[in-house]
Image (cartoon, rainbow over all chains, first blue to last red; front, side, top):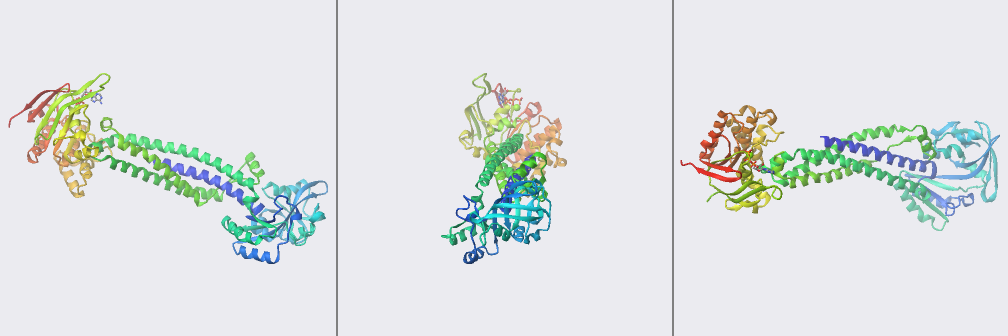
Length: 389
Length: 229
Ligand SMILES: Nc1ncnc2c1ncn2[C@@H]1O[C@H](COP(=O)(O)OP(=O)(O)OP(=O)(O)O)[C@@H](O)[C@H]1O
Ligand SMILES: [Mg+2]
């Protein structure tokens, strides 16, 4: 019973750890996808190295049709214009990023409306901008004030205009809050003299698998066009590396946890086996064969472990479910740190079924290994010595 | 032919430091149907000899033959199987399984022999009744007195009707009435079912009822007395 309990506890602990680890990764990826790169991007082949508007392109006609048929119902494409500019209020000037968006698509992609803290987002159809609340503070701008944008348009054209501030966007990701200027993509095209050109297209898909299929399919059509389609892992190699490193250190932690757990369980099995040595000795002295005794020990330990694993998974599931829907808020320094990395200040949990499967399997393998002890013991203990105990 | 023989049997503890000769050059023959007691002062080697015959212990030198076969040449499982099917063992310290009831303890050997459930239960209850524990079927060893535990141990050994019963001081903790009662049962089984009994004792009244008395002193044979009739 103690063994089952410790297995159970171990499973819950390992589950929680893995869920948090995986949860934060999933969130990082999801944030990056939804507020940054999208699953895929169609770009000019030179754009990745030199993200200049000079490498913008016009995706229309035949190619757009092919794209749409490739995407089907499982994915959709979003044209984007992005460029660095200088943004000025009455007193101050700051570097900022103009992002040309289509409001409905933006909301579909990342629930953008939730982050609009002032103003009516649908009014973005008109001439005007929504800006990050951090940027607004720096430029001491209020709604209805005028923002001046100075930048460089297509092929060195001057890009300068005044825009009324229609509203604010408050986002926990700092680069959005402090740098972003959102306007309609058509407005951005006008501002930067791009006409039908867009700096890149994002593609959102139901999941990563679908996205990869889209990439494989659509790649064929891009041969010879000077365009390319990139997966988010290619767009964010640093993130991929960071996640891999974090996973690795997560694994080290997990292994340490498992070693501790394994010793804990081994301890209980050890005591249990030693306590029952005399009983074993009696059984063998009365005529029970050692391999039958061993089999009995094996079955017993495995049953106990199974029990522990299943109860552990059973208990772990609602706990994780709770934290999945009510993530633990971070406070103080940690919260700032997390925000700096562009994440929301919550400790996210993952509910990926693979976690439950993996932890369950690992624990069962561990208990299988541990079972070796009582089995070995059944074959080797000395009868008389243990009868005398 | 003797059913059990010991040949130049030695058991020496701590041979390389201060040797203790638990058994010294024992040459004994036991025939089918014997009713033999092994006596001798404490530490004279009675328990060691019984363990040796039962295959629970291995000789330092010499051999134990059962049906002419040296048991040291048998595989471990064969020895265990032999114990299971032919030997009833009563330990000096009872060795009941604490988590099992009296009934379960007595049934254990028959269960290991894969006998039929109903038969096991009937037989176990019958033997427990014979040793006077009809009302203790479902008690665990911890709920029984020393004497009662001893009787459960005897019942366990007899229940499967083994050919040989090796009993280490089976009456040590019994009052004289229970002791004589137990000896009556043993004598009857010996006569009716020609079970062979080899048991150690300190008890003079028990010695009187044995037909052969083997006396050990310091592990060596001191006297081997066979009574006629
Ligand atoms: N494991 C052991 N290690 C060392 N010496 C042992 C061991 N077992 C028994 N002996 C010694 O062997 C001798 C015989 O012991 P044994 O138990 O056979 O005596 P016994 O005749 O059964 O005594 P008792 O009447 O007290 O039960 C004793 O001197 C004992 O100390
Ligand atoms: Mg003894």
